Length: 248
Image (cartoon, rainbow, N blue to C red; front, side, top):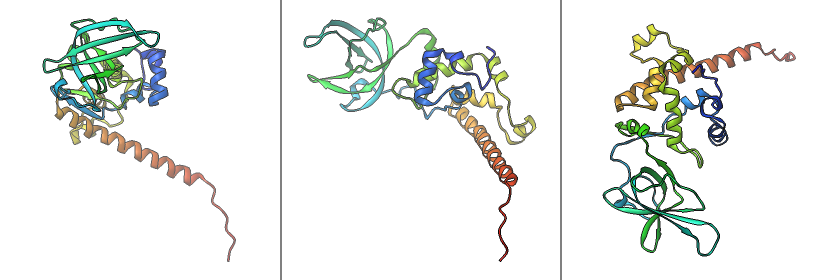
């Protein structure tokens, strides 16, 4: 892949996704994205159940499409798409205005995020954020821990997750891009994992223990950065000419 930590994300993710990430999350390089850590991890079975939702809840649900219908809107131009989804415990309606959702076919599974509303006594999402599951996602959602990232209006957590996955899937690219600042002897003495391993475990953990290992290692990196910053400031201060003061 030939990337480095300073590689522009446009070269990895393409211009459209990279521009939105830069504009809304200030993520511009490979380093920025790999250092954009999950804010928490969702466990399998923690997704909201449709029968537990309350109006006003901001949630993400995993559900299957059971019905799709599209019709012209009555009081304005455009089409209205109504989608019914279920999770075995309950069902709700998704409403889309003037939007194409060709992949929302009966039988498809997806993640749907939005604020629960009410229409004529039925729970619904109005124009929710959607991520339809594909075969490529099976491994991610079979994991015990699913990373949830700080996101924005146009960059969802799962877009970030898939973007990070692109960087981590080829182990050679990450190893080549990283220059581990902590020598192997020091890592061994303190029981620290290599930086590449820490980043993989932080973004795609198999267990809470892997998250803890990654956090411990990344704390050392943060301390090194802080020490380097303070040392640079001290050097800069030492180079500044002194101010001559008159004798009293």
